[in-house]
Amino acid sequence: MLDTHTRKHGYTEVSPPYLANERSLFGTANLPKFEDDLFKTTDGYYLIPTAEVPLTNMHQGEILEGEDLPIYYTAYTACFRREAGAAGKETRGMIRVHQFHKVELMKSVRPGQGSEELEKLVKDAEVIVQALELPYRRVHLCTGDMGHQPQQTFDLEGYFPGMDRWLELSSCSQYGDYQARRCNTRTVHSVHELGFGLRAHYGGDPGKLPAGKRNCGDPRSITPLYGRDGRDSASYAVAGRLTNLARRWSFP
Image (cartoon, rainbow, N blue to C red; front, side):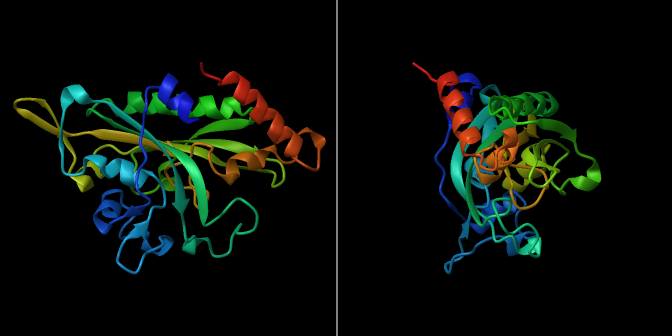
């Protein structure tokens, strides 16, 4: 996945820290509303619930030059969720877990480019889902199904035969200037013009289904393979697809 996004889609790979301070989580709007879903250390730091937090705050308090935009970042990290709001729902198996790994994509773009860049980001996400040969559908969420942060969200939902349900595999969102303002990240387009950039990101959230954050890097992403091909075990299906991917995505 990282090779695909960095070598084919133009993203820069980042290895961010797994701990974040309160200011960073405020910037991404995880605080104060979702504090109960976070793991907090005794000295006041938080384990990141997603790489969205450090990636979004990489330019916290900075004024970016217009010619440097858009900026594409990707990261593969562990993610930590308390799932306090799950109330015991789907806590067995691989749908909701407290720790998982995933790939995150994040873009910082000029004002006015958000919708165009979001469409490109969704297509980048679809490349991974299609390569895994997962049956999926693209859903444009209505306002009532989104969180309070994004302007619009597209979910890629996979079919889970064991549950006979469609669940989120990837979620791609456009945030406008919401997080940019909270992080105080700005951009200069000319001597007399100062504005906030737009951003979109994609990665994964196995706990809830709000805007945001999956790139098929966590346990939920292989769950749709179980029950495929009429087998009780998905080991053959998983191994076969991973072997095909290794051949297809081999680089010199």
